[in-house]
Length: 255
Ligand SMILES: Nc1ncnc2c1ncn2[C@@H]1O[C@H](COP(=O)(O)OP(=O)(O)OP(=O)(O)O)[C@@H](O)[C@H]1O
Ligand SMILES: [Mg+2]
Image (cartoon, rainbow, N blue to C red):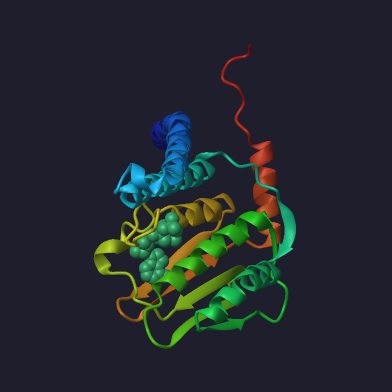
């Protein structure tokens, strides 16, 4: 299969990047600890020792913040790159969505965001990793929240089933995605936000793909964005997993 070579190269690249991230972590920790010691030493200096104490302190503190931020990026990247075993259970998409929303409710209310939730009247059974699905949904919801730029802020969350495929849809009335950005939003580290890492949507895509699902995005600049995640229903996922388990390729050589 021609794709195998590419897939293998990507997997190798992922392994190299993870190795690199791990290598960077130790010196980065040393840098953080050194900045912390420096900060403590400066703070302990008597006022008459230097007239630039505040300036030096603020530099040491800035170093601590920057190293902390780099460490966060590395952690998030490593979480993304690590192959994760899926913990599959029978789950109701309605409940997964409701649980995730409960987690954000207070934050939304505080920011004056109107949350409109419309759930499918019947349970939407999946065979899925609930924790991963909550993570994917949370990333999408946070993106929606961060895009809100109008006086009236609305996020609408709908669950449903289309041609037997359960879905969850998140619509915001935020700034929308400029046409030029659309091809890039799933690229690793693509971000237009000041404090964005650009890992949110790549993680969403990874999770949805591993579940055999699909993501659709529709956006109008200045008007808002709609993200829809389709997931295979319980029986379809189970069949897929059974197929995977039995269809595992045999080793090429008998050792
Ligand atoms: N609902 C949305 N409305 C407008 N732009 C969006 C929306 N969702 C994603 N984007 C665009 O896609 C980019 C990538 O999103 P992604 O979630 O991958 O990274 P991020 O949000 O910038 O950073 P983070 O790693 O913290 O999630 C965003 O920076 C933004 O430009
Ligand atoms: Mg994001």
